[in-house]
Image (cartoon, rainbow, N blue to C red; front, side, top):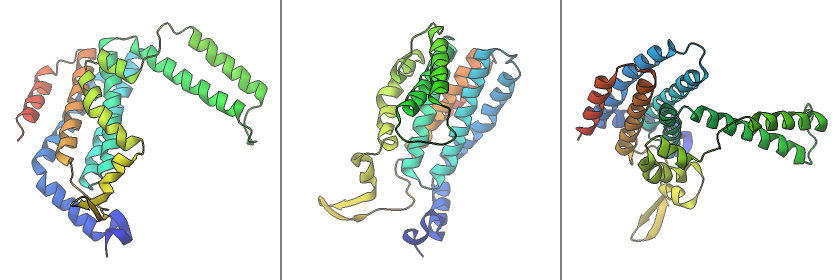
Length: 258
């Protein structure tokens, strides 16, 4: 049996998973050791929300970073390269919002205006569609929804911001220029990213590569750890949780990893 018959459910894929976990045991140990500490910050911050919108958004963003971080753990050990990169990009983007909000509380309004703009686009698409879809609101109802969205946008006092602008407010612009931009090739389908499935020898195509791989695994895991530690820094700063020494210790552990 091979991965070309049963894919990643094949027994060979299971053996590759065990090989990856064994070969990269040290970095996986660091990766998983952070999860309990990260959840300690979650529980502390969760107890301090007190119905404040900014605090609620901050904790929700942090929870998203935690689920993405844990998802990367499961996907990476299966040797799914592109999928790990896609999750890693989402983790970094969420980290931008989280760190930006910890530095500037008006970012919560940026999230609001992005949400309203997306709703407005959805309504406009339906209004402009020529396809008859049952159970949708009438045009008059959709126009009323559109007007309500416009009214809500009108009272938001901050302008929309791009991901790059958010990365600057988050003090993570280097991540945007380097890692984040490179990971976009996996999210948006293109030939460069699809080259991971192609095998060349002496500049000649000799076959296709399909199945689990540990290519770039160490870099991806280390990057995810850096981002979750930055997220922990942000939530710690926002709620004054006094976890600085613990987070600093984890930063040093990652820095000293060889």
